[in-house]
Length: 197
Image 1: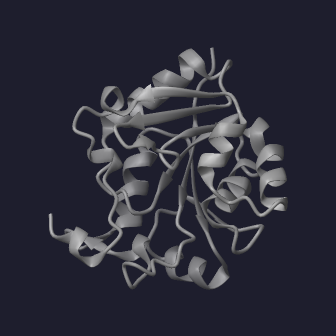
Image 2: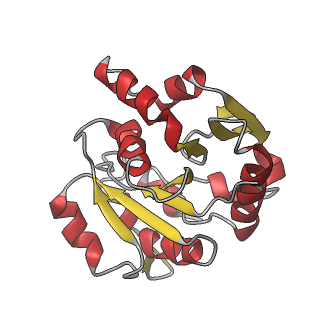
């Protein structure tokens, strides 16, 4: 029976639609990245944050808990798939849950349920992907370290969609509403108007 002990938060985007670095946006006077990582530290022994470069890492270092490991993209400019590639090459365990830095409302229930899904399915699935009415939630998913080679192959062909990865491996679909009946865990903040909650 497998345990899911690693989680990686992807923060390398430039937040063009938002107009600023989304991980540093404030909710209740706390940066998104602090809110998310504080919650994750209660559930995972290894918490990683993947950033685009050392400049961004410098901005994050004073904000997040010292127990969080900061990584920078090994393949700059490769988008979220590049962040997945970087994290999978640095985790201690066999797999990691991935989350975007613009989902500060992730719930404890979602995290517990994803860990339970991995316990049941981790040995037989390359990825465990929440699936909602609008399709997959590929940045709220668990990926096995064994798919890193597939990620590298896709990026070498300039295929950067995380959805392409899901289609290329043995992905197990789980209804998003079963993982978080509120669906708040999947709520992203992409534009300034999204912050009016």
